[in-house]
Length: 283
Image (cartoon, rainbow, N blue to C red; front, side, top):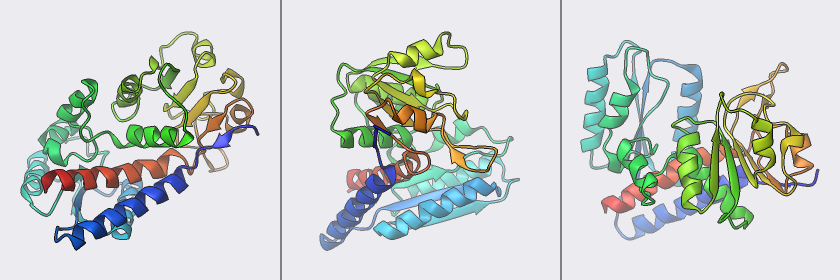
C-alpha cells in the first residue's frame, strides 16, 4: 500500500484537546462553558448511539451538554416549541435536532426554526448561503471535517480538479462549496452521471459520499490523488466499509482516509468546533 493514511481519529483527538484547552481558558477568564443541546425524537437506534457519542465528546472537552428526548408521536408544533426554548436559552450555544425525524415532521421546518447563530449542524439556509458567498459562518460538520483532514496533509488545494460523488445537502452540496472556496475546480457526480469512471480517473481529489459499498474501484483512482471516503456501509460479513475499494485505491493514491476511523470522528469533532465558535461569538 503506497498511500499515506489520513487518520481522522487522531486528528479528531487533537481537536478535542484544543477544545478542552479553550474551555479551560474561558473559565480562567470568568466566562461560561459552551453549551450544546441535542433533541432526539423517537427511539431510532443509530440516532441514540450517535447522540450518546456526542454527549461523551462534550463531557470530555468540558461543554455543558443537554439531551431532550421526545416521544415519536411528538407533533411538529411541539418540537418547534422545544427549539424555540433552546434558541432563547442563554446557556445553550448550539441546538441540534437529530435526524431522521418521524415522517409527520417536516425536517426543513425544523432546520429553519433553529437560530442560525446556534445552528451547529450548519444546515440553516442562512449558513449555507454564507458558505455559497464565500463568507462561511457555522459550517456543515462533515465537509468542515474533511477540509481539516485535507489541511493536515499539507497539500495545496488551489487548482486541483476535485470530483465529489453524491449531492446530498449534508455532504455533497456543501462539500462542493468548501472546495470551490478553496480554489478547486469542481465536478459533482450523482446517480445519473454518465462516464463516472472516466471523471474519477481525472481527479486530483476524490470525495466519495454515496453510501454504496465498493462503488469507486481502485483502478479509477488517478496516481497521486487524494481520496476521502465518507461512505459507511455494512458488507455481507457485517464489517463497516466505505464507498471506495480501499486496498486497491491505496496502491494508487498518495493520501486516503479509512473507513472506519476517517471522516466519522471528524464530523463529531467539527460539531464541537462549531459549538465553541458559537459560544465565542455570543460573548
